[in-house]
Length: 422
Image 1 (cartoon, rainbow, N blue to C red):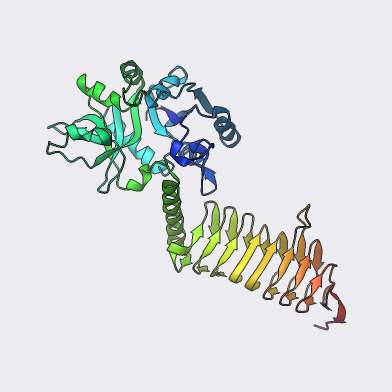
Image 2 (cartoon, rainbow, N blue to C red; image 1 turned 180 degrees about the vertical axis):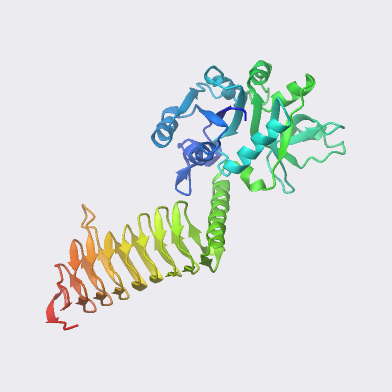
């Protein structure tokens, strides 16, 4: 297996995003676009070195990468002069004889596709290769132009297609922007790219035609899933990518035994774990770093926020929000409640309208609810507070002090009513 240096192009501003934030730092499912690309690259065994080319607000982009990924090299494009110039900026830092080039704003590419592409590049014994796709709908991708022998002779941008439309070839094959090159061939020919007079930039795609004219035809790897090459240039495309990744996640959960009634209205972030035979109703939102056990019933209209832990057999019903909390086995929170920074024991019943008031305006405070406790409807638990095992709060209680095991408290503020014998 050949060893590769991967060059990730992350210098652009992203004008159509209408934001001062660098395009590659816009978040997709809680992670910047460039984070998705680097996460997949780090899984590819053949990639031994990664170089990120930064430009617009380079320090901000580099700070994110450094704090989240190890062993990443950087090259800076001080003047945003196009993709060819961006690749050239990385030349002096390339360590390996083969180079993989990707864009940081195309976050849907997978490790499996990158690895398969590299294998195809090696099998073809190519000096240059690219990932292509056949796209029937209108799009802004550069088109692959092939000669009469089906060799790739050029990549043509959409606005320049007129000179090829008189031919008989299929112009639905598009360029993904992902390439593999022999390092020597790449940099010997990169310097021959001329500035595009209309845009005032150096287009990396021009290298394909330069190589073709020298008798070096680019190999290709045709994608079966066109979603993977979606580039993010606008908020609309960001929303499209969010939907695609959400669908991927839901399909994985269903394949592993989770029952999701309506995938189109269910939203599950990455880094979530869900046990088998859990049933999820529509309009459920589950953020990252949430763990859910088996045989649970969740929803509809619930929101599980980061850091939540749900044990086996839990029932969570309509309009429940849970944040940074643990809900013990077989406990039930069935109707419009907020639970924040709480540890709930096993077999606990949380009545309708219960609120854990975890924030006092300065700090978030903890609440502990013991096993088999019964929290009456419309109770407000003012943290920090502990509710003992088998304790009961009456409907409408405002609980400001700890409640001992097997006791009942009622009122505003809640006061001792009686001792339970059970």
